[in-house]
Image 1 (cartoon, helix red, strand yellow):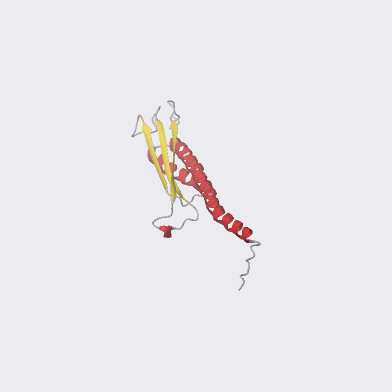
Image 2 (cartoon, helix red, strand yellow):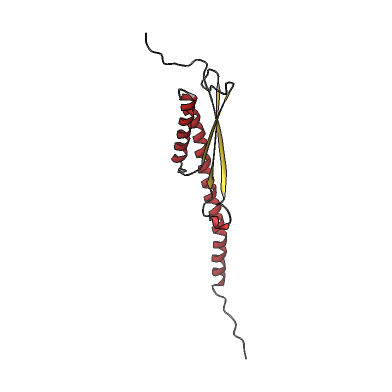
Length: 151
């Protein structure tokens, strides 16, 4: 018996399509992950800046901490990261217990993370994420305006 010769027309096209899909899917995931991390970096940087300003403009340290948290949360929400975890830490030098004293320097550190897209947690543990943090420093001037009742 004579064997029939197999026709291979079109097999290169099939191989090229499969190879393209196998290379395109990871490349698409990498690009989407980079965009997500960049969005988070912009959000955390803006959150640190906004929190520092809100804290510095507050009348007291207790009010400043609450305003800093709200300002940081709003800055993250502006970047579409409403549900991202947020940690705002405020420190002051040289007066650690009175940040609103003249010549004090307020340092705000904001920490958060973004989850990488299209990665299910079924692969083990939590979905993969990327940790982000930003620092902003605000000096308090030596001469400050205070509100006093008129005599």
